[in-house]
Image (cartoon, rainbow, N blue to C red; front, top):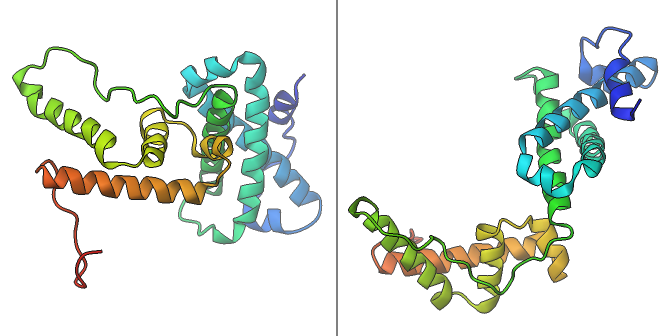
Amino acid sequence: MTGVQADRLAEPTAPPEDWVVALSTPGPEREDALRRLHALLLRGAAFQVSRMSALRAAVGAAQVEDIVQLAADEALVAVLSKLATFEGRSRFTTWAYKFAVLQAAVELRRHAWSHREVPLDAAPPLVEPRPSPEDYAEGAAFAAAARAAIDRVLTPHQRRIALALMVDEVPIDVLAERLGTNRNALYKTLHDARGRLREHLAELGYVPPPARSRGGSR
């Protein structure tokens, strides 16, 4: 029997009435609450991984249980670190379950990209070439303008980051590791790139102009 299966089966006592108190007070009740919480997080992580079928297939069946286990472990740490923020607006188990879902998605994407090449130079088209009915003419024109703007107004570095994060959907942690940088630096680059694109597209009349502060232009 695997560790995941054992956690799901071993629940001899009733769950705590107050999870926060049970998890905050040393003793047998806390150990039981921790075990129950971890079992819940395992179920949440397994559910999320089962929904992401394409990425699950990319990592292979052999790694799926490891990913679920790792996600549940990380989610447990996150839940315990944020116990003080639980406000009781929903059931504690519902609140905690979301940590597992989020962490499972992060772990699965990270594993799926761990051995894949990150395309930093190629610039794939934003729309596939095909006949454009009149109903789609405006959308096609906007896509063409956006694609041209990526090539013309962004620096090479901004273009690589924008394409990797927005088009290829490379996880930001993976991209940061590959480039030897950090999440904050990539977020700043992406923010600047989006600002340039919006200003250029606003000049062409495709989007509203960006709001300006009372102090004038930035």
